[in-house]
Length: 131
Image (cartoon, rainbow, N blue to C red; front, side, top):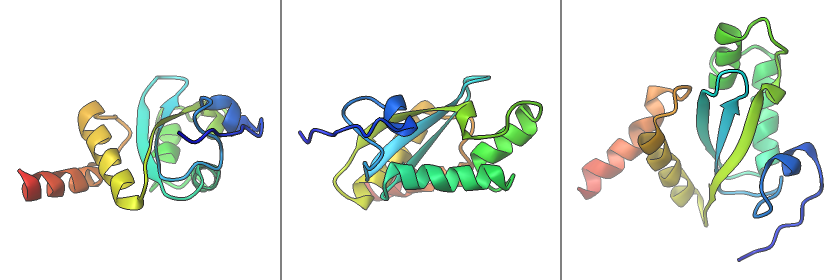
């Protein structure tokens, strides 16, 4: 198992010692601190870079973003930024296919309310191909 060294940034402070802000090929969960609804996502780039993408969508109030849309619709009166969500890394993987499949299985298993329907398509494709 690879040991990660936390850089003590805000991201590293949120996730456990098995990962750091440079972790790649991870499945993650953002939980809304106000209502506990959550979103499951995956990234093959460093988690800190994926969080920057989410942050940019929130700052632009982009309704195509599940996190931004949630804040707009459910918590418009609150501080509108990424700090409204708690980050957890669910799992780490060896490559992009493994990461994408793991995300699809996690979405199917936990049925997060903030995820969009099309994100389940990889899971459905996998089931049709191998079952």
